[in-house]
Length: 107
Image (cartoon, rainbow, N blue to C red; front, side, top):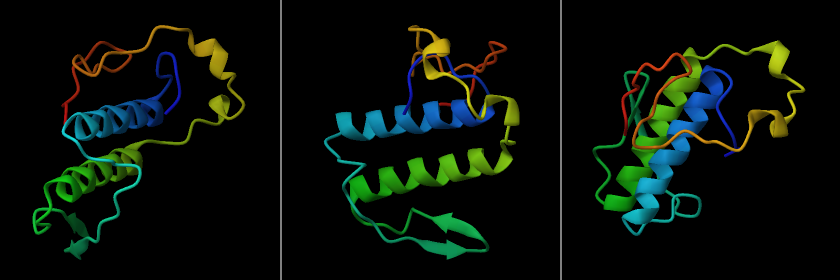
C-alpha cells in the first residue's frame, strides 16, 4: 500500500486490504506469497470451501477488496497525485474510517 491519509474510496479500499493482510500476517500467514485457489459460485468468490486457515483469510481479504474496488469510481483528478501530499498521518486499522469519519466495517 501507500502512505498517508487515503484520498478517495479506492484508497480506502486499499487501506482496508492492507489492514486485512496485516491481520493475516499477525496470524502467521504470508498473504503476499501464499497462493490459493478459489471457486466462483453465482459470480461470487467462494472462500469458505478452502481448508487452509491462511488461504481462507487471504481469499477473504482479496474478495472483500475486489468488491470494494468494484464500487469505487476512478477519480481522474488523482491520476498524477503526489503521494507526498498525503501527509505522514495514516489511518488506524482499528478505527477504519472514511474521510467523512464514518466507521467502515473492519475485516
